[in-house]
Image (cartoon, one colour):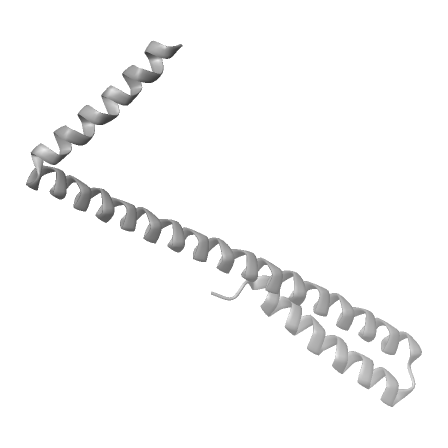
Length: 109
């Protein structure tokens, strides 16, 4: 989706170029200067719109990456759960060892 600032900025820039060229052609310094000023304003507005689009794209990409990471973590947790259900004795052994280790740490304090 293109930002509206890009569209209006480009239109102003083109109108400014035309006004400046017509001012140069007929010898009107006032129209020439106003046209160049309008051209610069349009260019600045277009750049502002491009910056907004870039920030929006980065935000969308970050959101997509976060969603992918969440899904991957969810799959990993599901796999771990499936393994612990498949090998309950191993899970109990690991839990017992962790509890024993924590007990040793607490008793030494």
